[in-house]
Length: 609
Image (cartoon, rainbow, N blue to C red; front, side):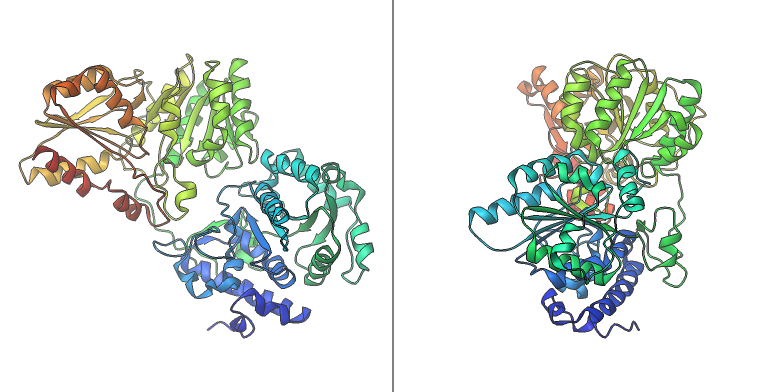
């Protein structure tokens, strides 16, 4: 049984405001223990939350939330915040179907004024709240807590530039733990390191208020040049310093202020502090040892298959380079970087830059693989259009986390990449049906120099299909027949092919034997294959792990242009529903989406009736 007597008395942040400073320090210790206990049972993001425990307590004790708006960026650091804001009793449901989100969520609590599943957005949103407050002549502060990794995103500086120009009262707290998901990179990280290694630290919470705001390190000129009063660096685990600075800023600040706090990701839990990623994301674990309860995989992950295939291609071709945006581990490029350190580039949380950086390298004759999660590539879409597609540059987009990804929910779902890429002239768009096909698609992309090319693959364990000894380039725009049948053809794009095969087994009990084809390409479509399927069957169904407007829509356009519908041909398209699907297991999410084997079998049977 956990001993949290003080935390047991806290039902909302208002309960903190009657506590003395010493009691708040004790509360922070109990909150850290509670956070560790919760994540040990649910899994989830651990290290980031542990690093902001004192900061969370101090902010809620000093400011009048929820009237004062508190925005966490990225909000995977918000678990302690959720515990203090009336959700402690629900924390065991974290990241589970019907339970609490792993991020802040407006529909979940009045203490979550803004959702931040992607980074670098808090200052923009906070400035929006500040302008709305002033136009309404209302009261209240706006506090944006942004990590040093998130600060590497250009949007944060666009917002600071605007905030400095407008001069609105806005509190930005830079949570500098020198650690995002992958180790921080770039000049911004080096700049922050210089600030806390050689800057003037605020030493005492007992400094006079005016002195506290005047005791500004001259090294903070970057933020001051953007119009912010810079305060710090301060120890983000020293409750006295935090409370003193926050109270002073609350009572005396004018215009935008940036408070630079130094924290330790994973603070207070040895296994997290010792981990390479500081306990960023974890499965359920034993609190005493930190040992995680991870099931042994039956097959390699798609990500690891991609990583090894790219290494093999790069060993044969020294023009191949790889780029990621702060996700070297998650995208599988850590192994590539170890093998080819001079040919792997982590640009920080800067997807726009990543895409155009790749475009520049492609224009100079290199073969860049722009390796970004589907959900994060959305942030670089303008660059995909203008800097890559219009110029016809051979950038290779390796799109991880395609489809529904599970516990991270809607913010991380790879639902839209097929729709937003396949409509671009000259773009080749592929989806692997299994890991063997993924290896061939890496080889296809490496060999393709005629323009941009993209291939997508999901998160998690692959199918167990035997891998080829080396990848073989596919013929561009050509699919394949998997099994011959009658009456109805199923044209699958991506890894739903396994569910299609299972659906065929279900249908066999009713004497229905569909033809199954693997499209491989959403662009260019295999026109000949599709029209042959139409000619030989009474109906056609397309299936994909993406939103409407993607593969099925392109097939429908082809059939329409060919006049197929004029003679009453039956066609259906199975896509993700027109809604954002909340966090659950991937299987539960696909059940909700209606894309399981049973759903496919029912669609086929219904169409034939």
